[in-house]
Length: 276
Image 1 (tube, rainbow, N blue to C red):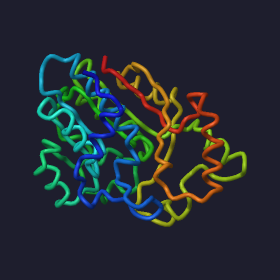
Image 2 (cartoon, rainbow, N blue to C red):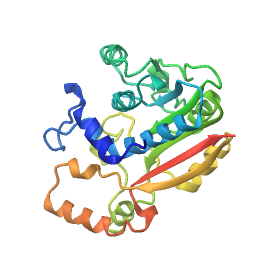
Image 3 (cartoon, rainbow, N blue to C red):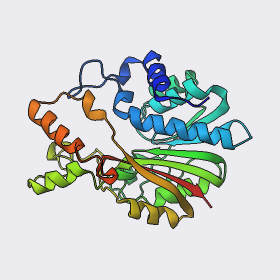
Image 4 (cartoon, rainbow, N blue to C red):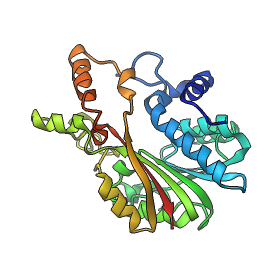
């Protein structure tokens, strides 16, 4: 039976989330990390569900790239249990968080990897530049909100192509460069890049958004590594409803959503690719 959005929403809200998932300033009280990603996570779940239906051999081997803080893994395990074998690869987790995620069985394995060797912080990261899983061993790669943080996505794409089996699937999400909010900000002479106080100018150890990509650019970059687009589409990420906003911002967002009848004006890109 297909997982409905109502079932998904009810299930994730019944999970007992650790306190570390509580969001800080700028978010409404009680907002948890998964609230800001729940639309993208639902689409990821639907891809896992369809992959399980298509593949006869279990468990389905999934790689969650940029897994921190582990919310997606907790949700996937809640829905699919032992039908999946889930590996996380990324940076930023403390030993305590890694142990918590492994003890809770959310993830079967967790590995550090810095897949952005052109970034100026790479030399100080001490993390390996390769995903620590064998070639052609993964059925499904989930790459949620990673692309935009990379100085160059080429090495990252090479790595996910390397670890994917033939006919393996990539589920990729990233902010949409054609988002109407970005366009309107430029019209009123504002930047659509992160504000200075959230940039590397102010916080040099941070890795904020570096570049956003058009759908055709993602198509080209993935195709160069033998990852053929199955389809792409755009969604409303909905995370603004959890933010504390003055009335003026609420009005702006209402105006922005009036343009969402044009799909590529929505804020979130989702692409699904298959390794040829």
